[in-house]
Length: 195
Ligand code: 5GP
Ligand code: MG
Image 1 (spheres, rainbow, N blue to C red):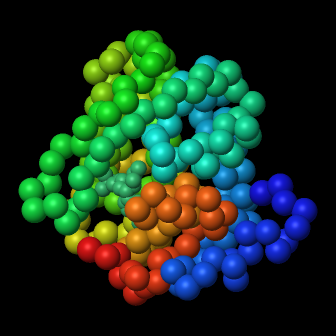
Image 2 (image 1 turned 90 degrees about the horizontal axis):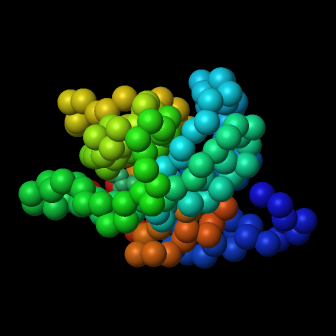
């Protein structure tokens, strides 16, 4: 992150609501470079249409796309996902559809975190039924969920993490904490996912 002053946004200044840093900004920066290298190789000079999910993937997305020496089209979608705690799991809903025509495009879906996998599966199905030539997925974080029998495969993954509720680097809790440069644990859920 381009900051000349290490006292700006230092983890010590996050306050008592943040229990600690799970993935540091340095670890993120290095992993995002590796992901970009993998994506660049996979597309091998082809044009790619990136479908980023609002709002959680925004920070990841902006770092990632600047490291891709490819012809990149950027489109944004918003999906309402229902939490695992909802009594009846519901299908995610598309609140903002892609603005562009995905027909014949090589689509890369970029999301912040994969938990149950429902959101990513829903978006993959949407892109496929819109006539995309190919659909791949990239998520910064995948939560370890031993209680789930199976989840959709992802093509590019930043970090596998334990089943904690995390915030920062785009991820929120009640619309807060997206601006934290590190991926952090919330004090209120420290030691668990909040499920
Ligand atoms: P899934 O559909 O895979 O169960 O859930 C994915 C969505 O749930 C993510 O895109 C994200 O918006 C939200 N989510 C899941 N786990 C977390 C978490 O630990 N922290 C935050 N901030 N959002 C989460
Ligand atoms: Mg999300």
